[in-house]
Each structure stands twice: as structure tokens, then as C-alpha cells.
Image 1 (spheres, rainbow, N blue to C red):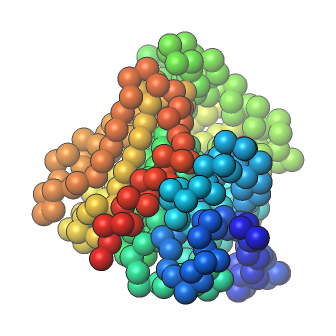
Image 2: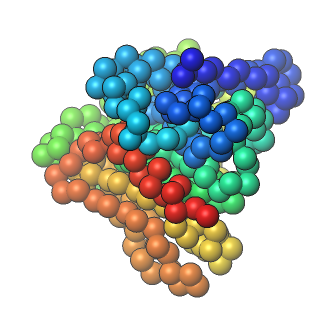
Length: 347
């Protein structure tokens, strides 16, 4: 009884695609929920890693150590919601886009209200939070930025690149290709914790090309197929436009320019006077300085921007751990404890 599945038909997505579209989420309830059905509990929306599903709750509850902790009286009394990431081109990143449709609107105006009705959450209680790692790290931070009034705080671990001048090691706005760096060497896409490159961008994209029925990465369902569908416009053939050539890696800067709407650092830079006050006390990010996807670089530049802000001076907490890899310090227990501690301060 402590796990509920919420499934709704999305009017936004059904209208957009001209056929029925459904959204799902799994809800993990705290041990005292049924003792106090009238109570508004803090609620945390957990965004999964790339292409993760809402049924990840099953693995968590099957973990005896977690389950024993969760049902202790001193465990955080927080409602933990597992979002689903599936869309027509892979992970939707839970945001509105030309290719995936109004996923952000569907989440915030349809699915979340439906969930909160089931668990008796009072929408004005200011205890609605976000958490996630990797892709889920980007989603949790991105939703907090894009829906700054709606959500009350995020805990984002190892987020995908939060700005695109450092999309890994690539500047999509100025570099000529994603396959080679400015010195003519193969651009690395992955590395070990000691810094050894393990996969080039060229091989990574060619792998996605092979796994796609269009012979390019657009419908691969992989990392770059998802990025391309979420951040880029729709092409003349109805499929996502290609931000870079799948065979040569040459960047189409007209398409790259349109990614700016999802470049979270640029969004903050352009709108700090209005977003800054709404985000005070709401941003918490962790990143390993040897992130296996080089996502630490973008987070460093985000931190540099936030450190220079004024009116207001950002109070975002961004923590880096030396010689730590991708999502290395993620812990559901730690996140839930931080959520409970923050919610306890809300009056």
C-alpha cells in the first residue's frame, strides 16, 4: 500500500500528437502517511537518469537496507515520486519541445496536480521539491529554473551540461565540429576517473547512427538523439533537425542557436533580475570534478556566473568533489534527509 501508480491521459500531449498519450508516475509514501491522511507531507519529484522509468521504485523497495530504513520512525516523512522519462525520441527531459510536445506543461499542469490530489498535498504549502542524477540532475535543475515559482528547491547530482558553450568539451555556438577539437585531435566524449579517454565523440555518434532506423542519431533513443529532440526544432520531414552532421560532425550553427532556450546558464544570465529572487534558497548541485562525461566543465562555468551575481547575490550551493566520477555521491537517503530538513524550516 505504500507504493501507488498514477496514470493519466494528458490532454496537452494527446492534442499535440493527435492520439491518446498517457503519463505515469510511481509514488512512494512515508510510513506515517496512513496515520495522518489529512496531513500535507513534503513531496519530492525524482527525475531518473537517461531513459529511466517510473518503476525504479521497485528496485528501491526491494533493497532491504533502504526498505528497513524507510519504514523506521526516524526516517524522513517525505512523499517520493518517481517520474517517467519516455517520449517518442527517448528521454523527454520533462520540458516543452517542438519534437516531444508540451511535456513541461503536461507535467506541471496535469500529472503533478493529479498526483497531489491522490496524496492530499496542499499546493500552496511550499514543500514541492525536485531531485535527480545525471539526466535527472539536468531535469531537476532545469525544472527549478524554468518553473521557478512552482518548485521550492532542487537537489541535482552530476547534471548533464547546464550550458552549451561547454557541452562536454564542445562549444556548440562557435566550434566547427563536434568530432575534433580546436587542435585537430579527436574530441573525447567519455573518460575514466583518472582522465583517460575511453570513447571519442565520433565513435559515440556513429554508434547512435547505427542504432537508428534513419541511419543518423535522430531516432537512436540514445543520449544525443534525446538531446537533439529536446533542445532542437522540428525538421521539414517532421523529425528532429540535426544540430550537427551525423557523418562529419560539422555543426549547423543556425540550429545550435535555437538550443539557447535550454541553455540554463544563458536563461539565468538573461533573466537574473526576475529569476534570481525566485531561486534564492532553492539550488543545490553536486558534481564530481572527474565527471566521466565532462559535465563538470559546464557546472564550473555556471558556478562562476552565479558567484558574480548581484541583486540578489545567488545563495546557490554547488559542491565539487576532487577525483570523483559521474553521480558518485548520489544517495536517495541523503537526498530525502536534505528534503526533510529543508521542509522543516518552512513555516
